Length: 433
Image: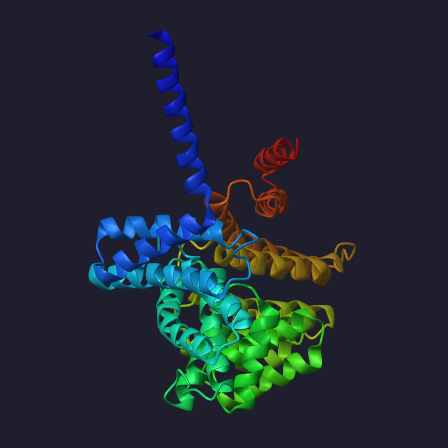
């Protein structure tokens, strides 16, 4: 009896091993994958979609074997399976009004499989069949690209969109009808690919598409702005400015190009050229605090430059313009730290300018000299008093800003409020330690 049971056990183990060997057989896997695909094509439902996923696992193993690695049929089957997978995901997205793909790689795997099959194929009918499959796949890839873009998967979206262009090129090379009915449709696809490449930070690739489109007469402010920034980063200032100025001329109302031009002049320190640009920017975006503050900073810098040159009338003019700009910024956002600090600094610097004049009379003990000294001292302290509330409000916004605390320490010292000056000195030391 014991021997009989042993024999039965042995048979069971052998049967199990045979089943495993059968499952690993690439011919068996190929047939199963094909069977699951046929069932899915006959009826697309959730159960058959699960089996389609299994078919993908099987065919992936099949094409890795020596027996099938160069098989046109195997690679075509793999392409068909992943094409079917992507088509079903497209259907689900349409029905559910969603933008989610469970397998972002499905479309790319389908493309790569068809291209492998195409390279291996010798017979014309097979090549024709593969081209037709690629045409079908292109539509699914385009939809997948849109879904991936909305998911902010820009690299994968870019790959999907580019594959559409590559399929179109292959079709045209083989005398087939283009995917795009009109040339403007093709250009629109090129524009999409370029913009996605730019967002994916593939700047070299984006540059190629944008320059190609401009050469074809397609103009967009985003092309010019991107090309300006690209060449500026590369250190090719001449080409960068070429695109910036061409863009500004073609799209004078575009704010992105305008701000790029403003930033260029700021970097170059060409403040005199900035004023008209900033006025235009303020007209376009009157509630943009950054633009208003930038205008104030330009006037502020011109104010200080005029003081250094001894041109006091010019300095006073720029002082009033800077003050007006900072007031406008605070009218938009009364708690803006930079606006508060800038206004305080403007008065502080005005006080410092008066202080220089004051020092001229420090050793003049004549009646006229003392009178002038007293007048200037009162004027200086008045500007410090005006600066004080702005710095105090700025401190509330950013309590640990060293520049704000230093300004408060110095102001209180000038106003002879030494206990408060020491308090801010201690705050600064505590932050440094």
